[in-house]
Length: 114
Image (cartoon, rainbow, N blue to C red):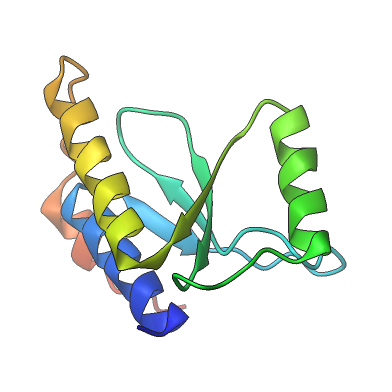
């Protein structure tokens, strides 16, 4: 499976949980994780996605270490199975007493035209 298909599965899964998985690009900071995952009941997470055989570059490893040194939650998910496991863990986290704030449905479908 291609990385973009894995990324789509993450984005769709996070959206189904009432959250967002924003694409992260940071000019001048190559190697930052692919996505910032925001769920209603927890602090944001940074997620780097790889295929099952994909490997982190030295630059990606350095960026991950920098974020972790700042106390950030950084996940590296390899392949669709790890994405599915991550999403299952998020669903369990929401069920296990951490009440997810339900955002209005209109927010999900809002058209952001300027």
